[in-house]
Length: 195
Image 1 (spheres, rainbow, N blue to C red):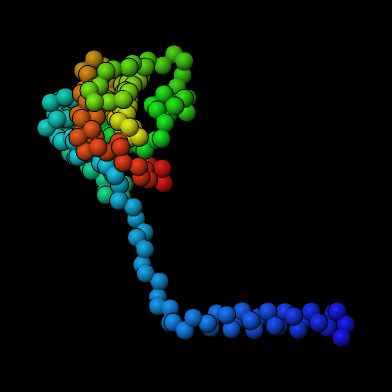
Image 2 (image 1 turned 90 degrees about the vertical axis):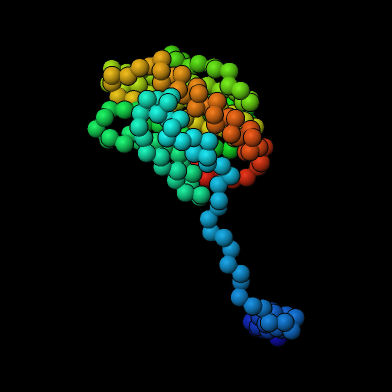
């Protein structure tokens, strides 16, 4: 038998062997179990915030939007959409490094107004203030372990910059305290913001 004629026989033999091996085992395999398709988030910043706090700190009557267990965005929008009052949003990521490490990836301008408030129970914090002619943008970050929470406020003119910065600092304090009490920054897991 030539080498060429032996190749089809070898291939056929391997195929038969594969079928026989697959048939071994004698047990019937049932259907695959359903696996969860959504991930429940570790944390929702709205757990520590409410409309009374937003009214007290930001001076706005608001509606709370807490997102879903899979995508926990916390947002407070003015009850009166035409009021010109600020919108407050809070979210988070899980980051294995420090806030300094994360900060290096954010690409802040050299002339950015960056402040480093002391926040109780936090590992680190930053507030970035960008006051333009038309509106005020304030973003705060607070780190508790691997949990970095972010607060964004957009306030159209006329705005009170000092009040909004103080309110963001208070918001970071509340978020840090709630995360520390729930040990949210110490639990490793996927970040819904990363998906």
